[in-house]
Image (cartoon, rainbow over all chains, first blue to last red; front, side, top):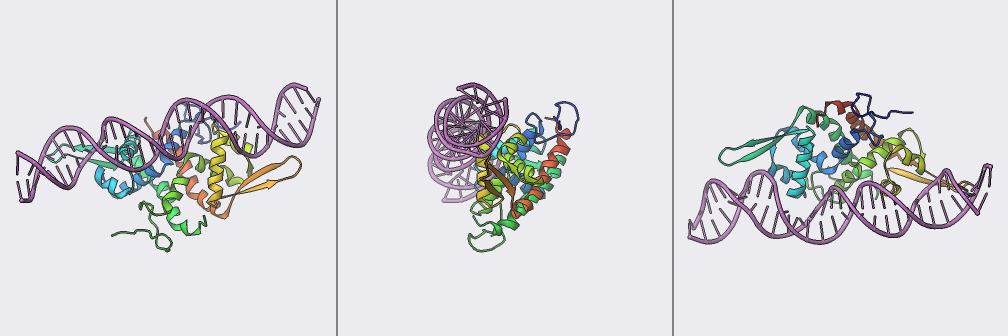
Length: 119
Length: 119
DNA sequence: GCGCCTGCTATCTTTTGGAAAGTGACCACT
DNA sequence: AGTGGTCACTTTCCAAAAGATAGCAGGCGC
């Protein structure tokens, strides 16, 4: 038998196991908008509106949901500045910076290899 | 103005541009099942049933759809062996092998860093 | 014939994605 | 005082996708 990825114990985990919690994490990260949002925040914190402008075509609802999920899982931080024109800043946590490496690998692969796609 | 990723011309592409065809490709690849399927085929061709067993929890309908989309976009090859017990083999194309590098980066990141997630 | 294998397809239900409009606080213009 | 703009969303609605379950057609062993 291969790894069953016992929940709770720090076994070595397996994304191929249905019960493994890392399946949920893969589902969260292996997503168009999550990959783009994390990439956009690589160069520093951004506000909601600026993120929406960079992730061309995202609706505010989907952006909110994406950011909330990433925040809940510890990939990014949401800071509210209650100063006169109130604004909210999103920034990568240490974990977010860490995961941005493989994600930017995927993004740049797509940009560099698009021409090789016939369909 | 930044890159508009003109369709047809071989500009440098931009995943952040809504109109860029690479957005569709990112959407295809930044997906739980696609990432797992490509990873499963890294070590050689597999048949439908074996893929279904490895991608624990996938339904045949979703597996078929995933494989079809990946085939249409040139990431994998579907070979039918009409020999007596007929079977179908799925294997990575050159492009599939190429994209499996960043995808395995993402998968292994998840497996290695799961313990750091509090939620 | 029965039950297993193969590789799917069909149906149904639930979940998600995406478009559009609204909210409410603030500011600036006229 | 009214119009319009920015900010950060929420709400509503609908269509598309995901997921669970069942079925099907052919071949094989017993």
